[in-house]
Length: 531
Image (cartoon, rainbow, N blue to C red; front, side, top):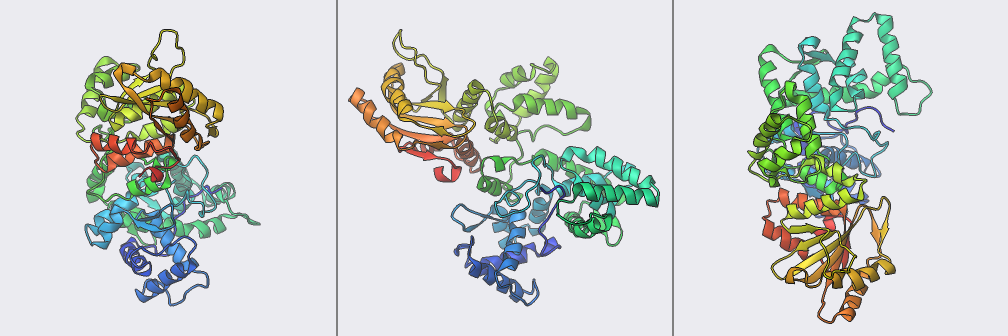
């Protein structure tokens, strides 16, 4: 497993990213040629790069050079590979090709670049990173340099041996301490420190792991990240020396770091799908909405309290949907009333709808069945539906109770069964019979409304789709007035659907219509299948 930062670097200077993007547009005939597995396209891209004088005049036999350059563009979120194997432009990619705010958009992609991302999680990327990585490398480096305790500089050697081994954004203090210890050490002590790091962190199989080899292998990555940070203008890369922060940049860099923290939260959409991650991470500077917590100032003396706010609100998909009173009540579980009210008012100032990033992980890894059901209901409410949780069925002696009932309109309803199986949920003949003979008839006439749709939301993968049609047939046999259609959704697909709707500013009515249109006796394991 990979333990050290990596960056695909056929070209180290980011000012050439836009030229590389134009070349791949030409090579793929405006992205109309399939990319995945198409070595001819990969070689065509190499030829275009040579023609644009971006690479040396040689084309590999298998197109590996083209794939490497494409990997760089995917890493920075200008393009992504869709489920059909075609390359798709993101919004920021479109802006670059239109020559709109090129420097601002490239800088934004550098400063939001994170581990993990869609390319690093792609099946073709090897070796994989260890699972506990959660870091924005360029932003981490800028923050590292922006410290008086380090005299506002960090050398390439210090980046190679200490910064590149950081796994999380919150390791800034520990990395800083290691650098300070390194600077105070004698030459022999420094060599031992570097040798120890090389042995522990080098993922490659090799006979020796001396510090010199480690520096040689990873020093070019450090050099590339130094160039990337320099491009953003937040710090200066003094070649042969270090990343430095001049006195006249200290305040503006600090302000920009605060702005970045407010506007760009760590993106966990890779848990939903790599495509949804790519589309969201590839928004340009003007399209990108701030995070759900964008209204909260990231002042250091409030850091712990703000982390507590994130934890308490993690079960809610959209904070925007909560009233000031509701947010206050939630926060009062662990904060004082005055502090809870203050945070609630700040959060409620937000005027746009945004997915709560903390909810993504909270929902997809939920272990409690009942809470999983409640969170699923929360997503459906966020889409725009009126939802009843565990409504009492018709008939005094009926005990069979559905988990989620969705009001479609004044005359019709949809019932959903949430299945929090850790592995695969299979819609068996027995479960299908239960839905057709009990759930659907027992809620027919609920509040004077007809059941027209039914379905299942599953925590993971599912099987037994063919049973949906059989449920429809059996329900009609039970009651000729019942005419239903069904669907199965994975939790990732359902959450991805909400995220897509919010990002594309679809109003609640359109969101509801799109969702209901999916009940055609089919299953949806990914959001791409729902759109």
